[in-house]
Image (cartoon, rainbow, N blue to C red; front, side, top):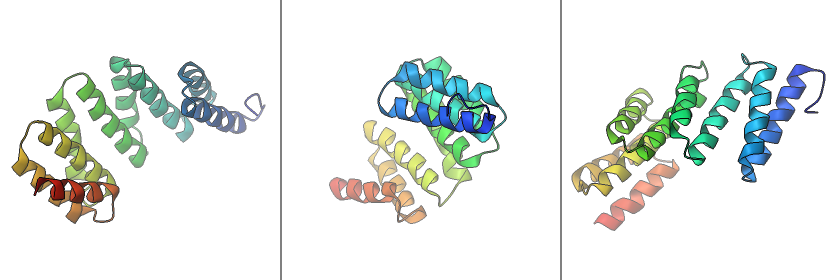
Length: 168
């Protein structure tokens, strides 16, 4: 199917193949398949998804500058969930680059712009871990309570409850 004449079938097949290669840890093969999928039709949502996945590969390979570029490109898309995921990934990229101020800025955008969502809870939890590493326990407690109140059924709320229990 990755050689199909119909472009949409070819793009779906290449994207699926790339997902499998990435899952298996075969990053060069995954990268190649995502790039080929993007080339089929760069305007399709699957191309944006492929760009996001290429960013994840670059992050995994510690190609942080390229990862940052790819995540910023995805953030400009009209796919809000993927753009949010790219913003989270960009924050992690900044942390790997030892740029905590830039990471915090990205996480704060998600916390303020997506209040009550699981992505806001995740961003808050990442901030919580940053604050914990700096021993700012008052901020840790406030961020944990924010995650619990904002998205009480999220995995991050559960993690926040556990962290609060450990701190008390």
